[in-house]
Amino acid sequence: MVPISLLEAWDEVILPQVLALEAESLPGEIWSREVWRAFLEKRQCLLFHHPHGFALYTWVLDEGELIKLAVSPGYRRQGLGGLLVEAGVRALQPRGVKRLLLEVRATNQTAQALYRAWGFYSVAIRPDYYQTPREDAWIYMKEL
Image (cartoon, helix red, strand yellow):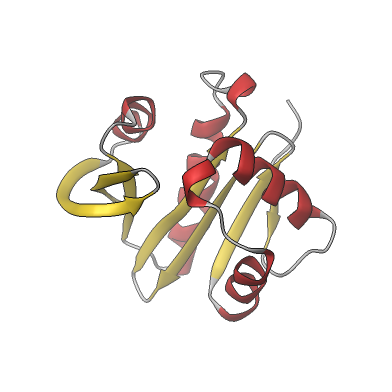
């Protein structure tokens, strides 16, 4: 497997790949290039990249959040999602993060199974969180 790389700032080479992965894997949740750039330049964040997936994390004090996780459809159920979760957990712990949160579509059973396998559990629901298509989000949390 190709190693997962960590980006902590804007990268003109990797970001086009991330944008393509996002469009392919998260069609209802696409950010513009400008939003990505602003996010990567102004927030405490970590972007883990693999040619067939990525995970974006942020944190404030002792609380972290998995903002986006995407794996190309042809590479799902092969362990890449788990590696991207593991990379985030390992990188956030030394930064003092004690809890990791995320939102996941209520209908995304595959992602929910992945998160539960990594020790996350459901703590709340955000009604109508996703707009395209309109759907609730389940909030998951993991103590690190």
